[in-house]
Image 1 (cartoon, chains in turn cyan, green):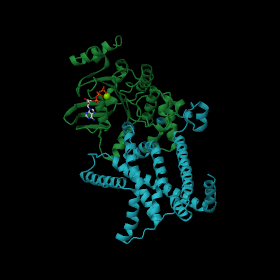
Image 2 (cartoon, each protein chain N blue to C red):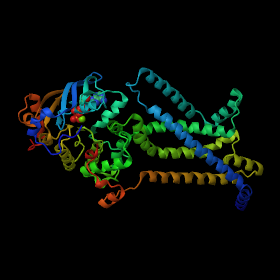
Image 3 (spheres, rainbow over the protein chains, first blue to last red):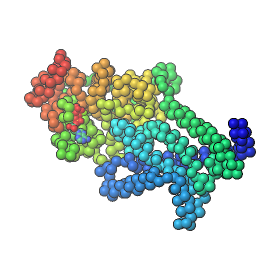
Length: 262
Length: 270
Ligand SMILES: Nc1ncnc2c1ncn2[C@@H]1O[C@H](COP(=O)(O)OP(=O)(O)OP(=O)(O)O)[C@@H](O)[C@H]1O
Ligand SMILES: [Mg+2]
Protein backbone atom coordinates (compact mmCIF):
# COMPACT_ATOMS: atom_id res chain seq x y z
CA UNK A 1 0.00 0.00 0.00
CA UNK A 2 2.82 2.36 0.80
CA UNK A 3 4.08 2.84 -2.77
CA UNK A 4 0.55 3.71 -3.85
CA UNK A 5 0.31 6.66 -1.49
CA UNK A 6 3.86 7.65 -2.23
CA UNK A 7 3.12 7.61 -5.95
CA UNK A 8 0.07 9.75 -5.45
CA UNK A 9 2.03 12.26 -3.44
CA UNK A 10 4.84 12.44 -5.97
CA UNK A 11 2.47 12.64 -8.92
CA UNK A 12 0.53 15.40 -7.25
CA UNK A 13 3.60 17.37 -6.20
CA UNK A 14 5.09 17.19 -9.69
CA UNK A 15 1.93 17.74 -11.73
CA UNK A 16 -0.57 19.49 -9.49
CA UNK A 17 -0.43 22.66 -11.58
CA UNK A 18 -1.40 20.61 -14.64
CA UNK A 19 -4.27 18.96 -12.82
CA UNK A 20 -5.49 22.30 -11.55
CA UNK A 21 -5.38 23.82 -15.03
CA UNK A 22 -7.27 20.80 -16.31
CA UNK A 23 -9.89 21.22 -13.58
CA UNK A 24 -10.16 24.92 -14.37
CA UNK A 25 -10.73 24.23 -18.06
CA UNK A 26 -13.29 21.58 -17.29
CA UNK A 27 -15.13 24.02 -15.06
CA UNK A 28 -14.98 26.84 -17.60
CA UNK A 29 -16.32 24.70 -20.41
CA UNK A 30 -19.09 23.17 -18.36
CA UNK A 31 -20.26 26.40 -16.74
CA UNK A 32 -20.20 28.51 -19.89
CA UNK A 33 -21.73 25.79 -22.02
CA UNK A 34 -24.45 25.00 -19.50
CA UNK A 35 -25.29 28.69 -19.39
CA UNK A 36 -25.44 29.04 -23.17
CA UNK A 37 -27.24 25.71 -23.35
CA UNK A 38 -29.88 27.03 -20.96
CA UNK A 39 -30.40 30.09 -23.13
CA UNK A 40 -30.79 27.87 -26.19
CA UNK A 41 -33.06 25.56 -24.23
CA UNK A 42 -35.29 28.43 -23.08
CA UNK A 43 -35.51 29.86 -26.60
CA UNK A 44 -36.35 26.52 -28.18
CA UNK A 45 -38.60 25.40 -25.34
CA UNK A 46 -40.63 28.62 -25.43
CA UNK A 47 -41.25 28.27 -29.15
CA UNK A 48 -42.15 24.59 -28.76
CA UNK A 49 -44.67 25.45 -26.04
CA UNK A 50 -46.42 28.13 -28.14
CA UNK A 51 -49.98 27.06 -28.87
CA UNK A 52 -50.95 26.75 -32.54
CA UNK A 53 -53.41 29.57 -32.09
CA UNK A 54 -56.02 29.87 -34.79
CA UNK A 55 -56.27 33.59 -34.07
CA UNK A 56 -52.94 34.33 -35.79
CA UNK A 57 -52.97 34.54 -39.58
CA UNK A 58 -52.53 31.50 -41.81
CA UNK A 59 -49.03 32.57 -42.89
CA UNK A 60 -47.79 32.95 -39.33
CA UNK A 61 -49.32 29.63 -38.38
CA UNK A 62 -47.47 27.85 -41.18
CA UNK A 63 -44.19 29.60 -40.36
CA UNK A 64 -44.52 28.53 -36.74
CA UNK A 65 -45.18 24.95 -37.77
CA UNK A 66 -42.05 24.84 -39.93
CA UNK A 67 -39.97 26.43 -37.18
CA UNK A 68 -41.24 23.83 -34.72
CA UNK A 69 -40.28 21.00 -37.06
CA UNK A 70 -36.78 22.43 -37.49
CA UNK A 71 -36.32 22.81 -33.73
CA UNK A 72 -37.70 19.36 -33.11
CA UNK A 73 -35.13 17.90 -35.54
CA UNK A 74 -32.36 19.78 -33.76
CA UNK A 75 -33.41 18.32 -30.44
CA UNK A 76 -33.70 14.78 -31.77
CA UNK A 77 -30.40 14.96 -33.66
CA UNK A 78 -28.30 16.11 -30.74
CA UNK A 79 -30.03 14.00 -28.13
CA UNK A 80 -29.81 11.00 -30.37
CA UNK A 81 -26.09 10.87 -31.16
CA UNK A 82 -23.09 10.52 -28.82
CA UNK A 83 -21.34 13.75 -27.96
CA UNK A 84 -17.93 12.22 -28.64
CA UNK A 85 -18.97 11.51 -32.23
CA UNK A 86 -20.44 15.00 -32.60
CA UNK A 87 -17.15 16.45 -31.38
CA UNK A 88 -15.14 14.62 -34.02
CA UNK A 89 -17.78 15.28 -36.64
CA UNK A 90 -17.94 19.03 -36.06
CA UNK A 91 -14.26 19.68 -35.34
CA UNK A 92 -12.76 17.68 -38.18
CA UNK A 93 -15.81 17.87 -40.42
CA UNK A 94 -15.79 21.66 -40.46
CA UNK A 95 -12.19 21.53 -41.60
CA UNK A 96 -12.69 18.94 -44.30
CA UNK A 97 -16.04 19.96 -45.70
CA UNK A 98 -16.16 23.71 -45.24
CA UNK A 99 -12.48 24.42 -44.96
CA UNK A 100 -13.30 26.07 -41.66
CA UNK A 101 -10.59 25.90 -39.02
CA UNK A 102 -12.56 26.02 -35.80
CA UNK A 103 -10.23 26.58 -32.92
CA UNK A 104 -10.71 23.79 -30.44
CA UNK A 105 -12.10 25.99 -27.70
CA UNK A 106 -14.82 27.34 -29.97
CA UNK A 107 -15.59 23.80 -31.01
CA UNK A 108 -15.75 22.67 -27.39
CA UNK A 109 -18.13 25.44 -26.31
CA UNK A 110 -20.23 24.88 -29.42
CA UNK A 111 -20.59 21.15 -28.97
CA UNK A 112 -21.37 21.15 -25.28
CA UNK A 113 -23.76 24.14 -25.48
CA UNK A 114 -25.70 22.75 -28.38
CA UNK A 115 -25.97 19.39 -26.64
CA UNK A 116 -27.14 20.91 -23.38
CA UNK A 117 -29.57 23.08 -25.34
CA UNK A 118 -31.18 20.02 -26.87
CA UNK A 119 -31.83 18.47 -23.47
CA UNK A 120 -32.87 21.75 -21.84
CA UNK A 121 -35.37 22.50 -24.61
CA UNK A 122 -37.48 19.54 -23.59
CA UNK A 123 -37.05 20.34 -19.91
CA UNK A 124 -38.19 23.92 -20.44
CA UNK A 125 -41.14 22.87 -22.57
CA UNK A 126 -42.25 20.46 -19.87
CA UNK A 127 -41.70 23.14 -17.22
CA UNK A 128 -43.90 25.63 -19.07
CA UNK A 129 -46.66 23.09 -19.59
CA UNK A 130 -46.60 22.19 -15.91
CA UNK A 131 -47.59 25.69 -14.76
CA UNK A 132 -51.31 25.82 -14.02
CA UNK A 133 -52.99 27.45 -17.06
CA UNK A 134 -55.23 29.33 -14.62
CA UNK A 135 -52.37 31.69 -13.85
CA UNK A 136 -51.93 32.46 -17.51
CA UNK A 137 -55.64 33.19 -17.76
CA UNK A 138 -55.53 35.43 -14.72
CA UNK A 139 -52.66 37.38 -16.25
CA UNK A 140 -54.54 37.75 -19.51
CA UNK A 141 -57.67 38.80 -17.65
CA UNK A 142 -55.64 41.56 -16.02
CA UNK A 143 -54.67 42.84 -19.45
CA UNK A 144 -51.15 41.44 -19.67
CA UNK A 145 -49.95 40.48 -23.13
CA UNK A 146 -48.64 37.05 -24.01
CA UNK A 147 -45.04 38.23 -23.76
CA UNK A 148 -45.61 39.93 -20.40
CA UNK A 149 -47.36 36.83 -19.10
CA UNK A 150 -44.46 34.66 -20.20
CA UNK A 151 -41.78 36.93 -18.74
CA UNK A 152 -43.45 37.84 -15.46
CA UNK A 153 -45.58 34.84 -14.60
CA UNK A 154 -44.73 31.64 -16.44
CA UNK A 155 -40.96 31.71 -16.95
CA UNK A 156 -39.93 32.68 -13.41
CA UNK A 157 -41.87 29.70 -12.09
CA UNK A 158 -40.57 27.45 -14.85
CA UNK A 159 -37.03 28.48 -14.00
CA UNK A 160 -37.51 27.70 -10.33
CA UNK A 161 -38.99 24.31 -11.13
CA UNK A 162 -36.24 23.22 -13.50
CA UNK A 163 -33.25 24.21 -11.37
CA UNK A 164 -32.75 20.55 -10.39
CA UNK A 165 -32.56 19.70 -14.08
CA UNK A 166 -30.13 22.52 -14.74
CA UNK A 167 -28.01 21.09 -11.93
CA UNK A 168 -28.18 17.67 -13.54
CA UNK A 169 -26.98 19.08 -16.82
CA UNK A 170 -24.16 21.00 -15.20
CA UNK A 171 -22.92 17.89 -13.41
CA UNK A 172 -23.22 15.77 -16.53
CA UNK A 173 -21.26 18.42 -18.42
CA UNK A 174 -18.49 18.46 -15.84
CA UNK A 175 -18.03 14.75 -16.37
CA UNK A 176 -18.70 14.64 -20.08
CA UNK A 177 -16.20 17.28 -21.08
CA UNK A 178 -13.85 14.29 -20.71
CA UNK A 179 -14.86 13.26 -24.20
CA UNK A 180 -13.50 16.56 -25.56
CA UNK A 181 -10.02 15.20 -25.12
CA UNK A 182 -10.58 13.71 -28.59
CA UNK A 183 -10.18 17.24 -29.95
CA UNK A 184 -7.19 17.90 -27.65
CA UNK A 185 -8.86 20.20 -25.15
CA UNK A 186 -6.68 20.19 -22.03
CA UNK A 187 -9.44 19.33 -19.64
CA UNK A 188 -8.98 17.28 -16.50
CA UNK A 189 -9.20 13.99 -18.33
CA UNK A 190 -6.69 15.08 -20.97
CA UNK A 191 -4.21 15.97 -18.23
CA UNK A 192 -4.72 12.55 -16.69
CA UNK A 193 -4.03 10.89 -20.02
CA UNK A 194 -0.80 12.83 -20.58
CA UNK A 195 0.49 12.40 -17.04
CA UNK A 196 -0.25 8.70 -16.85
CA UNK A 197 1.11 8.25 -20.35
CA UNK A 198 4.49 9.54 -19.29
CA UNK A 199 4.68 8.07 -15.75
CA UNK A 200 2.70 4.81 -16.28
CA UNK A 201 0.80 5.53 -13.04
CA UNK A 202 -2.73 5.09 -14.39
CA UNK A 203 -4.28 4.06 -11.11
CA UNK A 204 -2.78 6.84 -9.03
CA UNK A 205 -3.61 9.50 -11.56
CA UNK A 206 -7.14 8.18 -11.94
CA UNK A 207 -7.55 8.37 -8.18
CA UNK A 208 -6.48 11.99 -8.22
CA UNK A 209 -8.91 13.03 -10.94
CA UNK A 210 -11.74 11.00 -9.39
CA UNK A 211 -11.35 13.02 -6.21
CA UNK A 212 -11.17 16.28 -8.16
CA UNK A 213 -14.28 15.44 -10.20
CA UNK A 214 -16.13 14.56 -7.03
CA UNK A 215 -15.12 17.81 -5.35
CA UNK A 216 -16.33 19.77 -8.38
CA UNK A 217 -19.68 18.03 -8.67
CA UNK A 218 -20.40 18.10 -4.93
CA UNK A 219 -19.71 21.83 -4.78
CA UNK A 220 -22.01 22.41 -7.71
CA UNK A 221 -24.81 20.41 -6.06
CA UNK A 222 -24.40 22.40 -2.90
CA UNK A 223 -24.40 25.73 -4.75
CA UNK A 224 -27.58 24.87 -6.60
CA UNK A 225 -29.35 23.84 -3.40
CA UNK A 226 -28.37 27.19 -1.99
CA UNK A 227 -29.80 28.96 -5.03
CA UNK A 228 -33.08 27.05 -4.71
CA UNK A 229 -33.39 28.03 -1.07
CA UNK A 230 -32.62 31.60 -1.97
CA UNK A 231 -35.32 31.70 -4.64
CA UNK A 232 -37.91 30.10 -2.38
CA UNK A 233 -37.48 32.84 0.19
CA UNK A 234 -38.50 32.45 3.77
CA UNK A 235 -40.53 29.44 4.82
CA UNK A 236 -42.75 31.64 6.91
CA UNK A 237 -43.94 35.18 6.50
CA UNK A 238 -44.20 38.03 8.95
CA UNK A 239 -47.50 39.70 9.44
CA UNK A 240 -47.16 43.29 8.39
CA UNK A 241 -47.90 45.60 11.29
CA UNK A 242 -48.96 49.19 11.05
CA UNK A 243 -45.48 50.46 11.97
CA UNK A 244 -43.62 48.37 9.43
CA UNK A 245 -46.02 49.42 6.71
CA UNK A 246 -45.89 53.12 7.48
CA UNK A 247 -42.17 52.79 7.81
CA UNK A 248 -41.46 51.06 4.53
CA UNK A 249 -43.79 52.38 1.92
CA UNK A 250 -46.50 54.48 3.46
CA UNK A 251 -49.09 51.93 2.43
CA UNK A 252 -51.53 52.75 5.19
CA UNK A 253 -51.50 56.48 4.83
CA UNK A 254 -53.14 56.21 1.47
CA UNK A 255 -56.33 57.93 0.42
CA UNK A 256 -58.77 56.45 -2.01
CA UNK A 257 -56.87 56.49 -5.30
CA UNK A 258 -59.86 57.29 -7.49
CA UNK A 259 -60.40 60.50 -5.54
CA UNK A 260 -56.85 61.53 -6.14
CA UNK A 261 -56.90 61.04 -9.85
CA UNK A 262 -57.43 64.16 -12.01
CA UNK B 1 -66.12 57.40 -15.83
CA UNK B 2 -66.58 58.80 -12.39
CA UNK B 3 -68.21 56.70 -9.78
CA UNK B 4 -71.86 57.60 -9.56
CA UNK B 5 -72.26 57.11 -5.87
CA UNK B 6 -70.27 56.85 -2.71
CA UNK B 7 -73.09 55.83 -0.42
CA UNK B 8 -75.09 52.64 -0.69
CA UNK B 9 -78.28 52.91 -2.67
CA UNK B 10 -81.19 50.71 -1.83
CA UNK B 11 -82.87 48.85 -4.61
CA UNK B 12 -85.81 51.21 -4.81
CA UNK B 13 -83.61 54.23 -5.42
CA UNK B 14 -81.63 52.26 -7.96
CA UNK B 15 -84.82 51.57 -9.85
CA UNK B 16 -85.94 55.19 -9.94
CA UNK B 17 -82.69 56.63 -11.21
CA UNK B 18 -82.30 53.86 -13.75
CA UNK B 19 -82.57 56.27 -16.64
CA UNK B 20 -79.64 58.35 -15.48
CA UNK B 21 -77.20 55.51 -15.09
CA UNK B 22 -74.96 54.83 -18.03
CA UNK B 23 -74.64 51.42 -19.57
CA UNK B 24 -71.37 49.69 -18.84
CA UNK B 25 -71.63 46.41 -20.66
CA UNK B 26 -73.93 45.15 -23.37
CA UNK B 27 -73.89 41.55 -24.53
CA UNK B 28 -75.87 41.08 -27.70
CA UNK B 29 -76.95 37.74 -29.12
CA UNK B 30 -73.80 36.03 -27.90
CA UNK B 31 -73.33 32.42 -28.96
CA UNK B 32 -70.56 29.99 -28.31
CA UNK B 33 -70.11 26.49 -29.62
CA UNK B 34 -67.36 24.03 -28.82
CA UNK B 35 -67.21 21.69 -31.81
CA UNK B 36 -70.86 20.82 -32.25
CA UNK B 37 -71.75 21.51 -28.63
CA UNK B 38 -73.79 24.69 -28.40
CA UNK B 39 -72.91 26.04 -24.97
CA UNK B 40 -74.36 29.56 -25.26
CA UNK B 41 -77.33 30.44 -27.45
CA UNK B 42 -78.06 34.07 -28.26
CA UNK B 43 -77.45 35.42 -24.81
CA UNK B 44 -78.24 39.12 -24.40
CA UNK B 45 -77.51 41.01 -21.26
CA UNK B 46 -77.09 44.62 -20.20
CA UNK B 47 -75.35 45.96 -17.14
CA UNK B 48 -75.68 49.56 -16.05
CA UNK B 49 -73.45 51.32 -13.63
CA UNK B 50 -73.61 49.81 -10.12
CA UNK B 51 -75.74 46.93 -11.25
CA UNK B 52 -75.12 43.71 -9.39
CA UNK B 53 -76.31 40.86 -11.57
CA UNK B 54 -76.19 37.29 -10.35
CA UNK B 55 -76.03 34.47 -12.85
CA UNK B 56 -77.59 31.30 -11.57
CA UNK B 57 -78.21 27.99 -13.24
CA UNK B 58 -77.31 24.36 -12.92
CA UNK B 59 -73.85 23.00 -13.51
CA UNK B 60 -72.97 23.01 -17.19
CA UNK B 61 -75.51 25.68 -18.08
CA UNK B 62 -72.74 27.93 -19.40
CA UNK B 63 -72.18 30.48 -16.63
CA UNK B 64 -68.41 30.22 -16.72
CA UNK B 65 -68.39 30.21 -20.49
CA UNK B 66 -70.44 33.41 -20.59
CA UNK B 67 -68.06 35.19 -18.21
CA UNK B 68 -65.04 33.94 -20.09
CA UNK B 69 -66.52 35.11 -23.37
CA UNK B 70 -67.16 38.55 -21.93
CA UNK B 71 -63.49 39.24 -21.36
CA UNK B 72 -62.54 37.22 -24.40
CA UNK B 73 -60.66 34.45 -22.66
CA UNK B 74 -62.93 32.43 -24.90
CA UNK B 75 -63.69 33.68 -28.36
CA UNK B 76 -67.44 33.99 -28.97
CA UNK B 77 -68.74 32.18 -32.02
CA UNK B 78 -71.27 34.90 -32.77
CA UNK B 79 -72.66 38.07 -31.27
CA UNK B 80 -71.19 41.32 -30.06
CA UNK B 81 -69.97 42.68 -26.78
CA UNK B 82 -70.06 46.43 -26.24
CA UNK B 83 -68.22 48.12 -23.45
CA UNK B 84 -69.31 51.69 -22.71
CA UNK B 85 -71.13 51.66 -26.03
CA UNK B 86 -68.07 50.65 -28.04
CA UNK B 87 -67.85 47.21 -29.62
CA UNK B 88 -64.93 45.35 -28.12
CA UNK B 89 -62.28 44.77 -30.73
CA UNK B 90 -59.98 41.80 -30.71
CA UNK B 91 -56.89 43.64 -31.88
CA UNK B 92 -54.07 43.05 -29.49
CA UNK B 93 -53.67 46.58 -28.12
CA UNK B 94 -57.30 47.30 -27.44
CA UNK B 95 -57.85 43.82 -26.08
CA UNK B 96 -55.31 44.38 -23.31
CA UNK B 97 -56.76 47.82 -22.56
CA UNK B 98 -60.27 46.39 -22.43
CA UNK B 99 -59.30 43.55 -20.13
CA UNK B 100 -57.59 45.99 -17.80
CA UNK B 101 -60.96 47.72 -17.38
CA UNK B 102 -62.84 44.48 -16.76
CA UNK B 103 -61.78 42.64 -13.62
CA UNK B 104 -62.18 38.92 -13.18
CA UNK B 105 -62.16 36.74 -10.10
CA UNK B 106 -61.84 32.99 -10.57
CA UNK B 107 -63.14 29.99 -8.71
CA UNK B 108 -59.60 28.70 -8.14
CA UNK B 109 -58.13 32.10 -7.25
CA UNK B 110 -55.35 31.77 -9.85
CA UNK B 111 -52.91 33.85 -7.85
CA UNK B 112 -49.36 33.99 -9.15
CA UNK B 113 -47.64 31.37 -7.02
CA UNK B 114 -44.15 32.84 -7.10
CA UNK B 115 -45.16 36.33 -5.94
CA UNK B 116 -46.24 37.50 -2.53
CA UNK B 117 -49.65 39.07 -2.03
CA UNK B 118 -48.43 42.61 -2.58
CA UNK B 119 -46.60 41.80 -5.79
CA UNK B 120 -49.56 39.81 -7.05
CA UNK B 121 -51.50 43.05 -6.95
CA UNK B 122 -48.69 45.27 -8.14
CA UNK B 123 -47.50 43.40 -11.21
CA UNK B 124 -50.36 44.14 -13.58
CA UNK B 125 -50.53 47.79 -12.54
CA UNK B 126 -46.85 48.08 -13.37
CA UNK B 127 -46.92 46.13 -16.64
CA UNK B 128 -50.32 47.11 -18.02
CA UNK B 129 -51.00 50.52 -16.55
CA UNK B 130 -47.30 51.41 -16.43
CA UNK B 131 -47.50 52.84 -12.92
CA UNK B 132 -44.30 53.37 -10.97
CA UNK B 133 -43.64 50.98 -8.12
CA UNK B 134 -44.48 53.42 -5.35
CA UNK B 135 -47.88 54.43 -6.71
CA UNK B 136 -48.71 50.84 -7.53
CA UNK B 137 -47.80 49.66 -4.04
CA UNK B 138 -49.83 52.37 -2.42
CA UNK B 139 -52.84 51.60 -4.52
CA UNK B 140 -52.42 47.88 -3.84
CA UNK B 141 -52.18 48.65 -0.15
CA UNK B 142 -55.42 50.57 -0.26
CA UNK B 143 -57.37 47.72 -1.80
CA UNK B 144 -55.67 45.04 0.29
CA UNK B 145 -56.74 46.91 3.37
CA UNK B 146 -60.25 47.03 2.03
CA UNK B 147 -60.44 43.25 1.79
CA UNK B 148 -58.65 42.83 5.10
CA UNK B 149 -55.48 41.41 3.61
CA UNK B 150 -53.06 44.18 4.46
CA UNK B 151 -51.31 42.19 7.21
CA UNK B 152 -50.56 39.41 4.76
CA UNK B 153 -48.78 41.35 2.03
CA UNK B 154 -45.55 39.38 2.51
CA UNK B 155 -47.19 35.97 2.32
CA UNK B 156 -46.95 33.74 -0.72
CA UNK B 157 -50.19 32.17 -1.97
CA UNK B 158 -49.34 28.68 -0.68
CA UNK B 159 -49.09 30.11 2.81
CA UNK B 160 -52.68 31.39 2.84
CA UNK B 161 -56.06 29.86 3.53
CA UNK B 162 -58.59 29.61 0.73
CA UNK B 163 -60.59 32.60 1.91
CA UNK B 164 -57.46 34.70 2.21
CA UNK B 165 -56.38 33.69 -1.28
CA UNK B 166 -59.71 34.70 -2.72
CA UNK B 167 -59.67 38.03 -0.92
CA UNK B 168 -56.18 38.67 -2.25
CA UNK B 169 -57.40 37.79 -5.73
CA UNK B 170 -60.26 40.26 -5.35
CA UNK B 171 -57.82 42.95 -4.25
CA UNK B 172 -55.67 42.16 -7.27
CA UNK B 173 -58.64 42.68 -9.56
CA UNK B 174 -59.76 45.82 -7.71
CA UNK B 175 -56.33 47.37 -7.82
CA UNK B 176 -56.66 47.75 -11.56
CA UNK B 177 -59.68 49.95 -10.75
CA UNK B 178 -61.87 48.14 -13.23
CA UNK B 179 -65.25 49.49 -14.23
CA UNK B 180 -66.90 46.12 -13.88
CA UNK B 181 -65.98 42.98 -11.97
CA UNK B 182 -66.79 39.47 -13.16
CA UNK B 183 -66.91 36.73 -10.55
CA UNK B 184 -66.92 33.08 -11.53
CA UNK B 185 -68.19 31.13 -8.54
CA UNK B 186 -65.79 32.87 -6.21
CA UNK B 187 -66.81 30.83 -3.17
CA UNK B 188 -67.24 27.36 -4.64
CA UNK B 189 -63.79 26.16 -3.68
CA UNK B 190 -64.08 27.37 -0.10
CA UNK B 191 -65.10 25.95 3.26
CA UNK B 192 -68.33 27.37 4.65
CA UNK B 193 -66.57 29.61 7.11
CA UNK B 194 -64.33 31.13 4.46
CA UNK B 195 -67.32 31.60 2.18
CA UNK B 196 -68.65 34.17 4.61
CA UNK B 197 -65.50 36.29 4.66
CA UNK B 198 -65.42 36.45 0.87
CA UNK B 199 -69.14 37.19 0.59
CA UNK B 200 -68.74 39.98 3.13
CA UNK B 201 -66.15 41.62 0.90
CA UNK B 202 -68.41 41.31 -2.13
CA UNK B 203 -71.31 42.67 -0.14
CA UNK B 204 -69.27 45.74 0.73
CA UNK B 205 -68.31 46.25 -2.90
CA UNK B 206 -71.93 46.06 -3.96
CA UNK B 207 -72.83 48.69 -1.39
CA UNK B 208 -70.17 50.99 -2.77
CA UNK B 209 -71.76 50.80 -6.17
CA UNK B 210 -69.32 48.51 -7.92
CA UNK B 211 -70.76 47.06 -11.11
CA UNK B 212 -70.63 43.29 -10.82
CA UNK B 213 -71.63 40.20 -12.73
CA UNK B 214 -71.50 37.16 -10.49
CA UNK B 215 -71.92 33.49 -11.32
CA UNK B 216 -72.84 31.86 -8.05
CA UNK B 217 -74.58 29.05 -6.27
CA UNK B 218 -75.05 31.15 -3.13
CA UNK B 219 -78.75 31.86 -3.35
CA UNK B 220 -78.99 33.76 -0.09
CA UNK B 221 -76.28 36.06 -1.24
CA UNK B 222 -77.85 36.49 -4.68
CA UNK B 223 -81.12 37.35 -3.04
CA UNK B 224 -79.65 39.94 -0.71
CA UNK B 225 -77.16 41.65 -2.93
CA UNK B 226 -78.23 41.53 -6.53
CA UNK B 227 -80.24 44.12 -8.36
CA UNK B 228 -81.12 41.49 -10.92
CA UNK B 229 -80.91 37.73 -11.14
CA UNK B 230 -80.45 35.90 -14.40
CA UNK B 231 -81.34 32.24 -14.73
CA UNK B 232 -79.29 30.49 -17.36
CA UNK B 233 -80.56 27.18 -18.64
CA UNK B 234 -78.77 25.08 -21.24
CA UNK B 235 -77.00 28.10 -22.62
CA UNK B 236 -79.85 30.55 -22.91
CA UNK B 237 -81.36 33.05 -20.53
CA UNK B 238 -84.64 31.53 -19.52
CA UNK B 239 -85.69 34.11 -17.05
CA UNK B 240 -84.43 37.29 -15.46
CA UNK B 241 -85.81 39.69 -12.93
CA UNK B 242 -85.41 41.19 -9.50
CA UNK B 243 -84.48 38.70 -6.80
CA UNK B 244 -87.95 38.94 -5.25
CA UNK B 245 -89.64 38.09 -8.54
CA UNK B 246 -87.35 35.29 -9.48
CA UNK B 247 -87.00 33.59 -6.13
CA UNK B 248 -90.56 34.03 -4.90
CA UNK B 249 -92.58 33.48 -8.03
CA UNK B 250 -90.54 32.14 -10.90
CA UNK B 251 -92.42 32.17 -14.20
CA UNK B 252 -90.90 29.05 -15.69
CA UNK B 253 -91.23 25.52 -14.52
CA UNK B 254 -87.51 24.90 -15.04
CA UNK B 255 -86.57 27.82 -12.83
CA UNK B 256 -88.86 26.56 -10.12
CA UNK B 257 -87.42 23.11 -10.44
CA UNK B 258 -83.89 24.45 -10.14
CA UNK B 259 -84.73 26.51 -7.07
CA UNK B 260 -86.62 23.64 -5.50
CA UNK B 261 -83.60 21.41 -6.03
CA UNK B 262 -81.54 23.85 -4.00
CA UNK B 263 -84.22 24.02 -1.33
CA UNK B 264 -83.88 20.31 -0.66
CA UNK B 265 -80.15 20.61 -0.44
CA UNK B 266 -80.08 23.45 2.01
CA UNK B 267 -83.34 23.59 3.96
CA UNK B 268 -84.12 26.82 5.67
CA UNK B 269 -82.14 28.94 3.27
CA UNK B 270 -84.88 29.86 0.89
N1 LIG C 1 -63.05 24.27 -23.58
C1 LIG C 1 -64.19 23.57 -23.71
N2 LIG C 1 -64.32 22.65 -24.69
C2 LIG C 1 -65.47 21.95 -24.83
N3 LIG C 1 -66.54 22.10 -24.06
C3 LIG C 1 -66.49 23.00 -23.06
C4 LIG C 1 -65.32 23.78 -22.84
N4 LIG C 1 -65.53 24.60 -21.79
C5 LIG C 1 -66.80 24.33 -21.38
N5 LIG C 1 -67.37 23.37 -22.14
C6 LIG C 1 -68.74 22.86 -21.99
O1 LIG C 1 -69.59 23.94 -21.87
C7 LIG C 1 -70.66 23.64 -20.98
C8 LIG C 1 -70.82 24.80 -20.02
O2 LIG C 1 -69.71 24.85 -19.19
P1 LIG C 1 -69.54 25.97 -18.09
O3 LIG C 1 -68.23 25.73 -17.45
O4 LIG C 1 -69.78 27.29 -18.70
O5 LIG C 1 -70.71 25.62 -17.09
P2 LIG C 1 -71.06 26.31 -15.71
O6 LIG C 1 -72.43 26.83 -15.82
O7 LIG C 1 -70.01 27.27 -15.34
O8 LIG C 1 -71.05 25.09 -14.73
P3 LIG C 1 -70.52 25.01 -13.21
O9 LIG C 1 -71.63 25.53 -12.37
O10 LIG C 1 -70.29 23.55 -12.98
O11 LIG C 1 -69.27 25.81 -13.14
C9 LIG C 1 -70.31 22.33 -20.32
O12 LIG C 1 -71.18 21.35 -20.83
C10 LIG C 1 -68.90 22.05 -20.73
O13 LIG C 1 -68.75 20.69 -20.99
MG1 LIG D 1 -68.39 27.30 -13.90
